[in-house]
Image: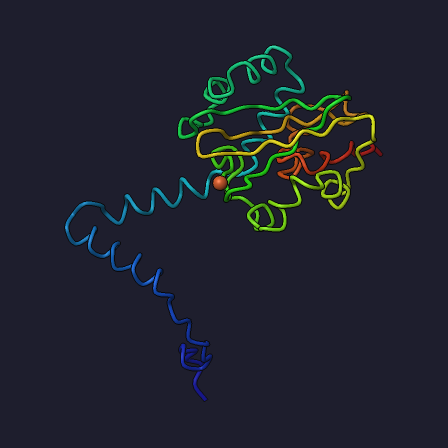
Length: 209
Ligand code: FE
């Protein structure tokens, strides 16, 4: 018996590439062959895309919760506020931060396709791109919020914002009650991606034992 664990010991199902994927690989090979791009350029771009995640948005929100000057700056000039803490939002044309209040809750959708503040939140979740969400966000935003665990009282207004190629939105959720003593780093962990799309509240304060 051999302990040579060759690939043949574990037959994998064949993954046939789709025509689109085949075309992408062919274009990549050509760009490399012609010297337009290097393998390093491609890897750097992949790393850059992967590095963009909701952690960026959580930093913005938590900082705004603890620092009133930063909060004002973030609302007045979101891209400049991003640059101030090292987040590159330059690829967004117009970036708007929507501040939730006791009277208003904001919710973000792209009814046309899947426009999303990727530099701030990374890749959009599949449900955000679904036809179901895009339709229901307009017709029944409160119903969606309820399904995500957020019950918005009738006396609180719900505003739905439709993203476009030019305008991207980020919701600045309300700071959860009972978090007064928490540091910015602790608060960041409460800021969920969904709370920055506006479909749910941030996580609650963790009781100190
Ligand atoms: Fe879109």
